[in-house]
Length: 90
Image (cartoon, rainbow, N blue to C red; front, side):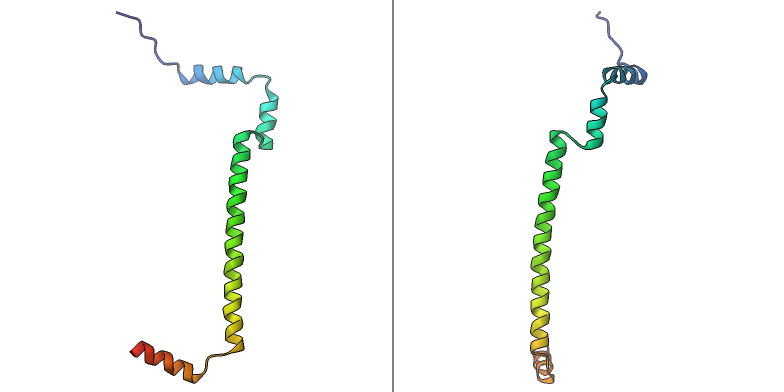
């Protein structure tokens, strides 16, 4: 029979990881600053998504303004309402 080694306890793994990062203050400041390649990828993805959303909102606002301007230019009359009601009643 072979010997089995029990898994390390939480205290053992926590102590190991903290000793690995002792005197590594640059990692702390890098994490505060948001540096690192993975962080740059996240920032680029979010900023590109926001630019797409802004483009869509600009297009939507332009369409709404166009339709509102056409209503101001040619407001609906009673004849329009009667014609629409006739289409609905069909």
